[in-house]
Image 1 (cartoon, rainbow, N blue to C red):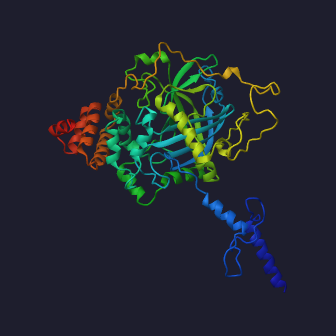
Image 2: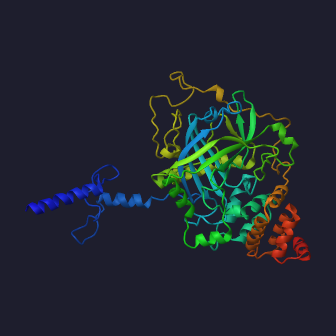
Image 3: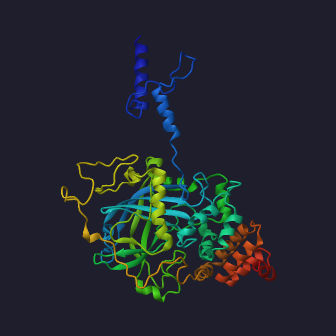
Length: 507
């Protein structure tokens, strides 16, 4: 008898140690049996009154939220940013107003065009999004690993993504016939395509890749003076990319190598670090450039805008719940703080709406009340209600202006900077100084012979799959205008002579 009691006691102890606290429903009621549904007799039909079963199935049915249209496959980590200097002479952004100042942050890395379950070895830009939890509110620096982009106007963005996505007829993987059909009519893409089809198009992992803000932004100081800036993250780890052959080998056994690499290295205490740099230009500097300074298909050469170190980011904490902290993380270039404003970049202007709008679709109108998206400082707003509204609203006054609650007021020192216009008319036209090919040629010539060979191999391999030779000819024309050797080598690899190319271009 004593032995049976001892065995029972041990069983209870083991159960308590193994399972800890009592399993409950979402409303906190204890669950008596999580293995068997409530039925009519032992073998009869399941009863609708089994509240726990219904709640469990309903919750399961809603475990997935709409997948991001772009940047669907991703991972992330938490860390901190330490400012290198005091930049208050050029920006009111508080996290940059003192050397050594620490700001907590979240980073999400991603692939751009492919679905959530796709391999991380695909040739694709990589998203590099940072959410700074500053004392003035959240600031999102949303960029990519590459310094430029395919297009310069948000009007083209849905079409570009559609071209990259599976065919609406076949639902097959990204098809070069569709991709190059689009880009053969978008010469501004030549620079970005040169980056993507080089080995930079497949970073070895997330830790060993650079990050770029891509767009120009405005830094505004307390006097209202504006300085245009571009951001660049440089890893303290060696930058490393994969050849197509190396990527194919990894892809044969793994589809999430970069996600696991980041998590495992942080878990081992090998915290990855990036130094943040900015380039600065004044509006009056723009006139001397042979390209539009806020064009996202262009870089600012270091000879005209040197890199200035702003601080260092360290990632030192893995998420404890991937869905809550990474999948629900919502980034938008519209999430700004005083001292940082968008430039006139037409692609950026469209993203200001689109990114926040997609988060409202995915997560609901109150997505900024989800813990990972909440600012660390207090929030005072009369925006209210809607799905999952959790922010406390007290008192009778939920409007402004109000005589009854005058302590809630505007802060005049944080007004937007001024923009001056003379003899302005509205227009729908290309930007000034598009200069579509020069920087693509500069990039090609900057590559080593090995990198040039890889670019020609990768790009010709994709173009060989394109059935419409007119599209191929137009693409070769773009690359030839960037650099004659670039175009000639591609044409030779594709077995197309000058006579054939000229004939095709006449069609």
